[in-house]
Length: 121
Image 1 (tube, helix red, strand yellow):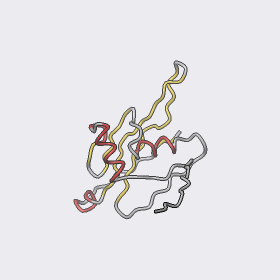
Image 2 (cartoon, rainbow, N blue to C red):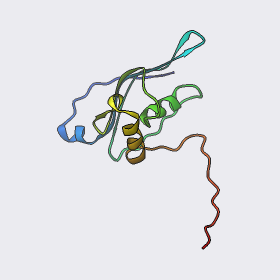
Image 3 (cartoon, rainbow, N blue to C red):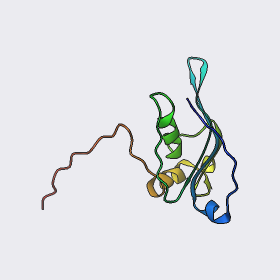
C-alpha cells in the first residue's frame, strides 16, 4: 500500500502556476468479498511543468491504481485531485475523455502494439 509522507512548504504564485498535478489526501478503497481493502492511503503529490516522475514500488503496492487516478481512468475514494487547476472529480465522462486525449497520458505496463499493414493505392 502506498502511504504518503507529508512536508509543508509555501508556494510562490509562479510555482502555483507551474503545477500540473496536485493531489491531496488521495485514498482509494475497494470492496472485496465484503471486506474493505485500502490500496492508497493519504497520498499527497505535486508535479510541476518540466518535472520527470517515476513511481516505484513492489508488486501490489498501488502504483497502477495511482497512475489510473492520475490518468483520469479511475477516481479516488477520498481526496482532491487537480490537473492543471481543474478539479477532476467535478468532470463528466465526456470532459474526462477530452482531458485524457489532450492533456495527460502514460504508457501502460501491459501494452499491445497494433500490427499495421502498409496502405496501397
